[in-house]
Length: 451
Ligand code: PNW
Image (tube, rainbow, N blue to C red; front, side, top):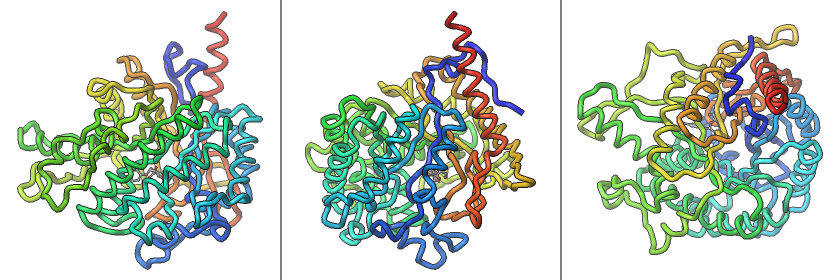
């Protein structure tokens, strides 16, 4: 089985960037050589992680990074998206942890040597616990600590980095972490979620400013996740419900950045749930981006509900991945086209897309036709959006390898490379081989076209 796209697609040009993505807490392990973070604490809280696991060893990437770079190179990708663990590179007092920083410098140097572009995310959810102890993202000082961290790291990494993203998915950090509590730090209050979101966006804006100063030649931006919201029926009440949900979950995080304002929904929140927004905050948040990272996995369907205004409707008959997320690639094209119609967008990179599947390694092979089909249909969806004029410049598979899937622990596998945790053996899955072949066929064909 293979993944293929129309020969003349922009996705088949050698300038289109293909990559694989990971995040520090999910793969690194070596927890003892960094500061404790909110996910260490969360994992140690009974009942929070489905298999009771933690990130202490994960994929042992800190010890095996050279082998992992080999793997990345073997996949033939143009780029590798990784995140930096704040508590590995800075001490409690904010000074640089030379040993921790050196890990990333060595990794970035090796990527550069192999001509693999580094897409570095500064914050993929692993807030140092000592910062959480002072209120974390509810404390207005945290965005300023983040700015200082971004400043130190971007000076240190210099031109090794092709692209910096300030944050990964502030929706998850704020809504899942502070509003529902299913992610670290596990707080559950609407007012907390909204205030955390505002401080995360402020942190993004403050960091953008230092990144543009320290690293003006890298692509600097942010990574947002989108779960497009569809109405259950054509009834006005359901259409309104889906629109409100969309404003609450999706537009809340992009509109402040691109339009300098929250959705009008802000004004309908109970006053005690409204975040404190100081004069000048929206200008800081709305600094221009060099790129927008878009993460897409699934859609959600909503109907009107008298109490909360909207309620999600489970799609019981629909095809789903192993994590229970509906497979609905059409929403991916529609999302990109709608974003392009709604906003003045910077260039778009798909910074995550992928599927969890119940993989098994048999005789050294992992056959994952459902994941392969997911990549095929979602790359088709990106192609469709590009045909409609959306400026998508790259695509990253989530994930390079199976890893710690947050509240799901190690039970859900998103990798295009299989990880046998007891032996830490990596095996490229059939989907990974097909992804490699797609990338490679693109090069061959673009040479042909250039003649
Ligand atoms: C993203 N949701 O998480 C993250 O960026 C990755 O670290 C993660 O492994 C991957 O997607 C797969 O889950 C999300 O509930 C988690 O909408 C939850 C949601 C979205 C993204």
